[in-house]
Length: 513
Ligand code: AMP
Image (cartoon, rainbow, N blue to C red; front, side, top):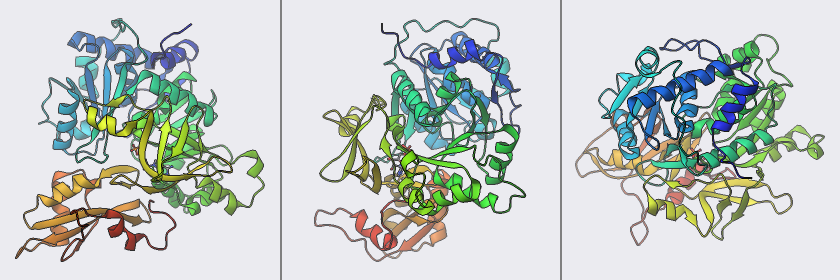
């Protein structure tokens, strides 16, 4: 038998078997009235109310609904409500500037824009057919409680469920089309490798907009796992909530775990969750020292995954295997610093040029309305990750060592160097610019701009940075600017970024951080 694998499978099971159990605890400290602690039964009811509301608004199947929100129960509800009714959810990074959000809304053709109260004023000028502020307005003017929504007419696992915009090699972000099937397989495999089960308590230490919170919300619901919403990453607050809610499982970039380690240093008494919490780290290669400290200072189990928005995201998984448990801590940390073994169902190979290629049911359908860009990454049945790496012939583990694509990853956020270069170039004093990632202790990498000023023009480092902050989300602005007389180019006029980066990365054993 073949039945379509859709997102409804996850929530329907929660609504059936976990109707009375606590499903989601909203962030208490937020500008909208928090949603009262929901059981999976009431969570599913609210999901139906969103769907009935979208029906009443005349939003058809296949239409796009964009959501710009910090983590919240409402955002989580929409990650289910929109795709489960055959519509497409477009979660948007809440740090983007109005022009950047306008681009995403335009490019995805979204007819509805749902905004967290914190960003609503700033984004009031973004053109869209229907706009609502999450909270009182959606509760009274959009959601229809107690009304049965129209069911999705032809549930199809190959239908697009979400479009997640990601910064890549192009100046503007591209919309990654993930299907229900992509998300389903990712959820199942992720749940399997993280050993998720009914007694887990999951905390959202990841932004939900980032690849749908790596797809974890779906599998957590499917298993009836209690989910705790966290709006802002703060090390001490994470520790407090781990204690308060009995959290067992969290995902995040290395910067999140560094923040927790920082807070743990002054935490009074025993660290909560010792020998109970498992964490999943990805987004950048975690420093071996961070891995060792998570074990020693927190007593939490460290695991690593590697993946991309384009792969839903799971491609590899790494945890200390039973045979390695007796190894010295340092050696275990070194082994854990690798991206890991391909997840079940994932095939990896490294091309002659050193690029990591992947085949998996979690690989994207395509970039939304960008056939050329899609053809560039899906070649002969292999997805081109743009990351450089090696596969250990002894145990099949992948190590990410380099980046082929022109992307900087700072604090877990991807930044397209080209986008920053375009912006800096629009400053009247700038004649030439190259933007590179350089190592940074807290953020892994940080953005550096190398700038050649126009004849007779003057500008300070702070002018260039302020110019970027005016036009781009803050995390995309360089943290340093170096003025140069010239930027070396090849005979064909190309800037060789790897050469510009080299002096800043010398002494490190890899070219990404
Ligand atoms: P995103 O699409 O925003 O999730 O970013 C995906 C990119 O993050 C990948 O192409 C890698 O460059 C980087 N990345 C993700 N996980 C890891 C990891 N475990 N180690 C090294 N880089 C990673």
